[in-house]
Length: 196
Image 1 (cartoon, one colour):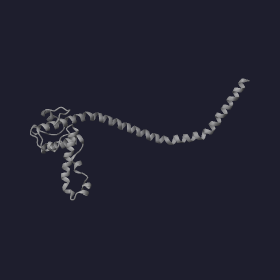
Image 2 (cartoon, helix red, strand yellow):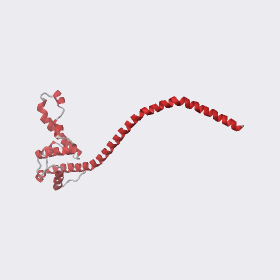
Image 3 (cartoon, one colour):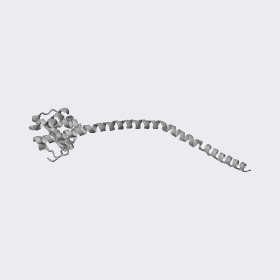
Image 4 (cartoon, one colour):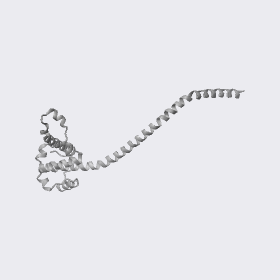
């Protein structure tokens, strides 16, 4: 595995951070990693950080599979497992560890596991920092959308009044033009009388 742009954490830091994330792991799990322990933990972290839970993965689009495979119900479990592992690999890629593969997950070394958890923890901390900013912008956006909706409703309420005033203006235009004409004539007469 290559050099990464996140710090490689010590085992005690990894265990403390995972405990904070609600994911139990022992020092022995880090030193002598086993896939049957780590993959479910990666799944918990995937749910926490990506919002993808087992139920979302367990309900794939079986209609598409039914069209192409006979007895597709026999493949539901394998399809679930493939999708589950694929989502875990996506999480690891997002966390800055793109070259993880099935061997990395099913035959982990202590060095790989330490790197994986360091990347996941780094991403979790980054995400936590950004979530505050994101929530602030989301709340601000929601307030602006509410204001926009209110203003649009107000405009819709005023539209008939504006239309009525435009029609009234159109109806009064001949009178206004007549008065302007009479005013011009009166001004001309006043100017003539002032000359005399």
